Every structure is written in structure tokens, then in C-alpha cells.
Image (cartoon, rainbow, N blue to C red; front, top):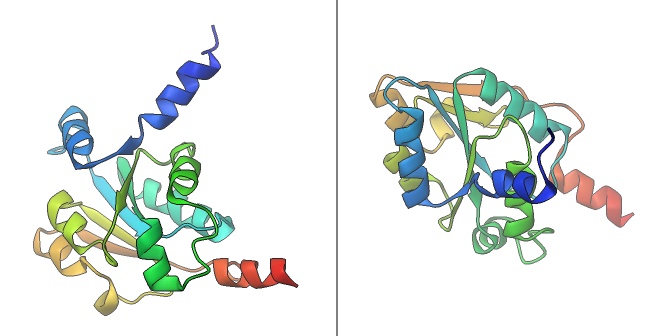
Length: 167
């Protein structure tokens, strides 16, 4: 028996969490034994580079939590013309992906506070970062966790995609 569209929507929306619901979910997942993977970003226009990073992040552990910059945070980081899509749309696009187990918004410019609270086992970032510049890497390493840098997929960037759409 296939699930109804409403049941499917509810299942997807249940991946959209705040600290309270994520804290409860971590207990259900048994955070003591499940390897929790965390990555973050703006995910403004989802493209192949993002998908590759999310797939590799999921392969690194048991549960993938994606920290999503809020609209205000994206605007501060990327400029007044961003984000192209609002946070609700970006969060829903991430939540619908099979490899994503939870999406949590954060208002700050970096996920430092979220990483301190979450204490993930594995922190994943794209190849445009190096270990010294990854926010939260020190927290994850201090607890014996791992920092994974996924090579960038050439030819895919949100900024380049926006420029291409303009021309």
C-alpha cells in the first residue's frame, strides 16, 4: 500500500527541526551508538556539487544533520541579492532528499554554537575549505571525531549558476 500525499508530506516536514525536536530525535536515534554527521551551508540553489557533498556526508556515518543558514544569515554573508530562495523553500528541498535525516536552521553567520550543542562525530565541508578554516573542527576533533573535506565538483557553484541565469 502506498502512502498518501499528506503522509509523505508529513514525513518530509518531520525532518525540519529545531534544537528541541532535534534533541528528542537524537535520543530516538541513540546518539551514543549512531555516528552523527553534520554539514552546513546556504544551499541557495541546490546543484550537483551540493548533492555530491550530501551523498558523501551520509556515507560517512549513520545520521546526516544539515545546518541551514537562515535568510538573514545568507544576506549578511552573500549580499543583499541573496538568498535567491527563502529559508522555507531551501529547507524543504533538503528535507525531501533521502540522504538527509534532519535540517535545522541557524541565525548566526557560522554554525559554531550549533556544533557546540550538537557535538557531531563527523563534520563535513566542501573542498573549498581547509581544516584550519572549518568552523567547529576544533570541537569535533577534541571529542575524537573526524573532519571530512569533500572535493569540490568542478563546474558547480551557486554564484556561477546565478551569473549564468542572468546572461
